[in-house]
Length: 235
Image (tube, rainbow, N blue to C red; front, side, top):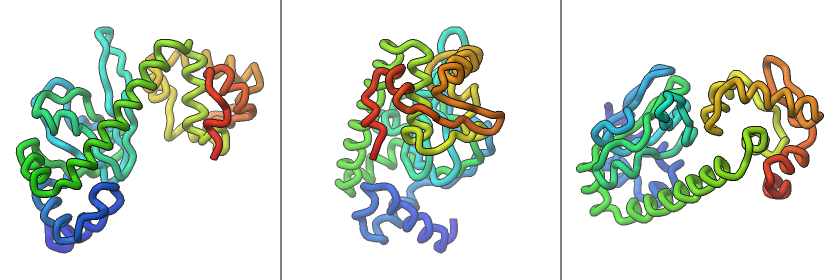
């Protein structure tokens, strides 16, 4: 990595909240301790249960964090979009990776090994505080995911996902960006169930769709099916 690239990456890391307060020189020292890598679409960045791959920051592209159940079904635990860190749990405790990371698009990441990260956390306390905030947010997300799977049928889970992807019904969902397979993985079901549920929602008049996009017609109906307050999806 050239000095120019170091500067560019150090500047880019201001998009990650807890790097923002660090001086440029400190950010340059941090990024110099890691590595930048490119990942072709569909490639595996690291595997679940393999030795710790360290902490990653997604600089460009999109990454799916995936768990595979005993039947071989992939559940997408989280969708990572720039600029965001991931695999911080393994990076902190040095244990195996808790999920598999797959490049859903051609992606670029910066990563740092567990041992090097610990040295940085001792040197830069703001990073430690930032990681605590990230872990707290991720814990809330996991609790919400559990509640979603435990209390909602597939059509209700899909209704909530459609509201999330469409920003509460304000924007159409581009199907090239969110395939049926991806949606199935995000709500722990199979693609056939997504297809059936989309037809049900269309017959109810809550949505309309083409091969290219899904349009939300009645956000309040989706909110009722998802058992959520529709005002939660408004600014």
